[in-house]
Image (cartoon, rainbow, N blue to C red; front, side):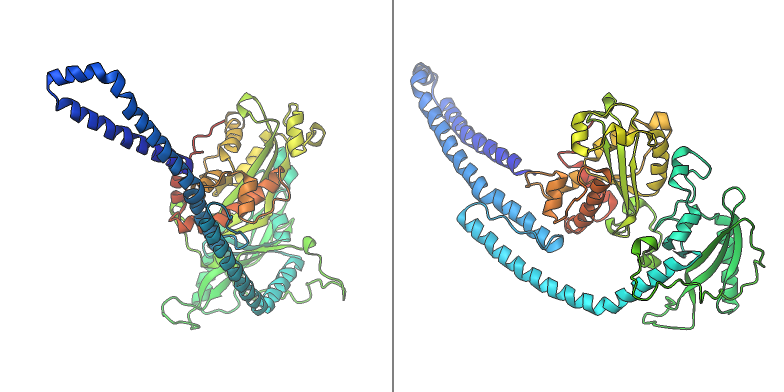
Length: 529
């Protein structure tokens, strides 16, 4: 409940109490009199009643003023102090409690801030020690990523449930149609989209994958080492993908409480190498062989020349190895949701009156991590003028969008990008309205669950004066370099959500359904466009 509402409820309660007591007293006295006495007092009413009423009004004003001061200097500062203290401990150690209110409250805020300084210093020392301890592991991870990206073949790793855990750029190129093809409706539209946490069965036919897994399982049962099976799939006109698939084993059998290593090998995932050719490879499908020797195919940069990160990215999230299917999305913990944070820039602020989207930005969140490499940053031709007021905000002019894809071409691509994900936006009512108005024309309907950081912020921090994206980001110590660009706002919205999750969990908001129910209680939940 907002402090202002609490204040007025308190004032209303005081008024009812004061005037109620006076009314009850006068009524009791009146009905205890004899009729002749009542008649006598009635003649004196105009001289008697003003004084009790004036006294009651004076008493109400005095008590109301004292309550107002109490709220201003004690209650509201303490409520904000509680929110800020929780923010320091759970999301933003750099945040400090504002020293506002009465002298005693401000002194308490100074003590909390001093404790926060000591806590932050200790936390930095712990983090530095942990980073130093993990330095070798991080170096090995970076070296592994560099080697994977230099392989001439495409590489994919998935868990046993088919969720993609790793892919390199070569695999992405082979399995994913170009952006131009998607937006112009050429062959391959909405096919071959890969991403961390997505299902491998969306890019490789399920039947062939199932057959390959079955062959590997039989070979594992037979005790054969270094297993691999091969098959080919068609990928576009005149093109085939030759796929080699090998199992990833977990030696934690799951049958012994303190098992470290045992003889039971369980398949926990799959490694796939891909090669695009014009002819399918011919191999005995039921004859597992050794993995091909990749020695010598790794390109090593010249001595002294640092690797160029942008030219050879490898994307991975190995924590998904341990994920089990969670069933109903609404019951999934917020930390494990796959989300797409998005934002739109438009020609104006009234989509119902014809304002159109001129830019769409989106970025994915997988397993509680922001995947910056999996994003959309697309200018859109609105096919109508862009107002000068709007251009002054987002910097997009009619010349910049001339010849860009239209919203009819972009939305199917975006719909596939958010498939199976929770959509996240700040003031989502506006962005979703922009999308919903295109449903009849494009045939694309977005029925994903939607989380709104505006609503969640008002639930977490009801005593704060502002819930704008800039204010929320400042409270959480986030910097939005690309403010008022669709992708920049989408990224900071994603970061805001990730920072909010510990705060939400502290309030008992753990699952998606919890967050949706809490959002419905927000005073901003009735916003519409």
